[in-house]
Amino acid sequence: MAGRAASTIRSQAEDDEGRQPLYAAPALEKGLDILELLSRQEAGLTRRDIAERLGRSVSEVFRMIEVLARRGYIVQDGDSYVMGMMLFALAHEQPPMKRLLKEALPRMDALAKATGQSCHMTMLNGPRQVVVAQVDPPAAMGFAVKIGAVLPLVKSASGRVLLAFHDAEEADRLMLLAEPQATAAERAAMRRTVAKVRAQGFAFMPSKQFSGLVAISCPVFDLRGRAIAALTVPYVKRLDEPDSVSDEEVRATLAEAAAALTARVGGSVPAHGQATTRSSKRSIPA
Image (cartoon, rainbow, N blue to C red; front, side, top):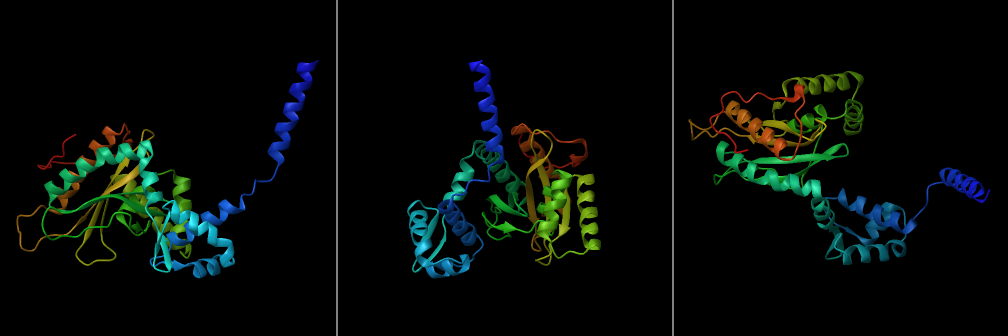
């Protein structure tokens, strides 16, 4: 009887807990609001700026700002505050991320040397993507993307790769978040573009920001065959080197590098995600 009564009480307690509203943590929410606000700013904000934009008083955010600065999450620059590198560092300390970067960087270095171009790797961050690794071109001049840069999702080769090899329903939701003003026709065009990338296994497109630049991107897969990252080469043809590597050679070498990286992190390439490497003479070591 005692055991049955205890079981009944425990069951009722669990039901009550399931019906309880979400717990509130006002101090934590204020701190997160500050971090989210500063993450969207190119320039710093003063205490008063932060308070006004969050609809709070300066006294409400003062202690939060001081603690966040002391812990390295934000950095004081004169009278203003900017995002620190603590969140970036914490994200890279996660075992899966750490392993991915460890395996990616030597292969990215080899890719840059083989093609004469820079390369970078991006990962999803909500309806955008962030550059988590980057290698400069071996020559004194070239085009490169900064590490930590936040890039558009739908309008970039790497973003299209990440969407193409993602859960279809979630990818559609991310496209709507990334382009909330898009018409029904524009959304349909986005889906066709992503479907084409999925069918061919890579993205190859002229840059929408820079004349003469071609973005070439291939997926890096996880165990379930989803893109955990996009490996990308922003290709620029050298006018003073007629024998420089062609964009097609770069694409083949990039596909080899992405496949080798997928294998090293234990990923699985889905049948529809195999980008052909053809006869690249600039192989990347496995």
